[in-house]
Length: 109
Image (cartoon, rainbow, N blue to C red; front, side, top):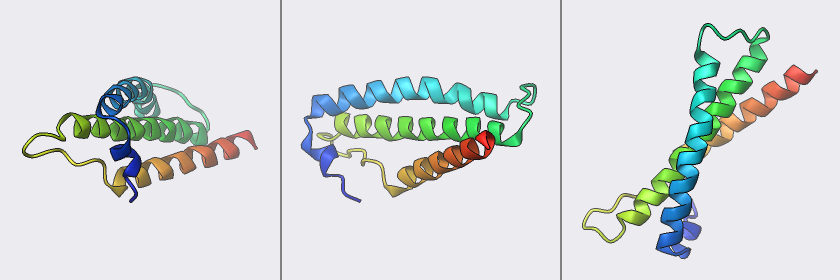
């Protein structure tokens, strides 16, 4: 995976943008995950419920990626730095976005 953008931008920019995006997207995505799995919310079609859950998982995964980039930037000069995100969170984000879009298309038809 090409991580040159994570290394080419300045350290302070990675900390600021990574931390800000992580917190803001996490605050949007986490309630969507809870709404998607909470039993008392009534989403009559299953595809609407799946779309809400997949959108929440997508936003939470992007939040994790941004947070991991920020933590890697903070610890890059330490003795044991944290590594930037691997390929797995990007795959989870892509699959959950594809599921959310597919469920949206099914719900609209």
